[in-house]
Length: 393
Image 1 (cartoon, rainbow, N blue to C red):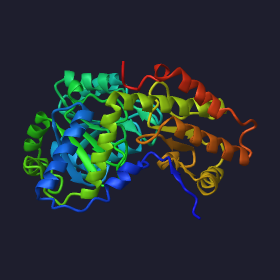
Image 2: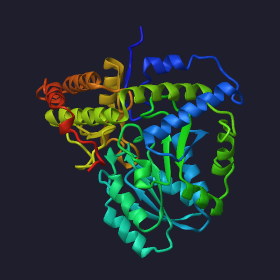
Image 3: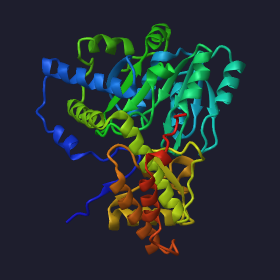
Image 4: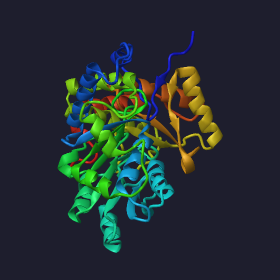
């Protein structure tokens, strides 16, 4: 009998049973009334969670497709734009723009650190022709959440447009799209929305549509204007991933039943418990305070070598059924990452920490056991008051 696995990577995330069941519904005509009703509910639900009245455009793709859509619709060849990176996915967004011929100005932070709004202010002052700024909300490669309100205030205070990658942040972490004046917000089905990969969801403001009309980069599949025309009659231009949309619909039901603020608070508590548990055993967290993500926790390699870390992750997966993630790019072999977003609760934290501590002990990497879970329990008793969500002040 195969070992049942608990998937705890930063995405794709585990699917709740009711979400899994929702995908077994019969296929429907994507040009018919049943799909129109599905699409209307999905888009309005995403608007509610993102706190926006802006259109939400749906494209069949991964989150990276949504990032490319933002570039292709917002910019022109040779145009100077600011890309703020705190890890590999921020780098990827800048690389996409470079491939399109954009004059990219990069604000690259040391790994594990967040964007300083003063740096954004400085670069915009030094580059007055920049009209658009691209920022990562939550970076899973480094476990950092940017504090979006002061960053957005700097950008909007200078009358610029701001696009935000919230693929791994939206629905899990506070994000007031309209309150912050965000022009484009990109997210994806496979993270906090508790659905399979396959759907990019992009909130687009009126100013972003106007910028897209002026922008000269080539676009076709990811054309905002064409997609908007079809979605105005509750259709998509290309064939949609209907089963993924069923899953997003059910995930939204769960989010709205729990309450958006309660979802944020749950992630804050779970994140605090994970961090407290691993630190109690002497492990070192990678991301800097106070911007540690409540959706993913990266931890310095406790095994010494990349080979030993690989053995640890393999032991967790094959013997204990716990699937964690290694590091990406330059961080490969240096850190491992625990994903705790979407369908995750207090009980899941205890399981994650118990198996992690057991595997570390089995490899001779801990001198004492029985520290992680009690530390997490103490934090759980204290409640959400001790785990303020990142980005809320």
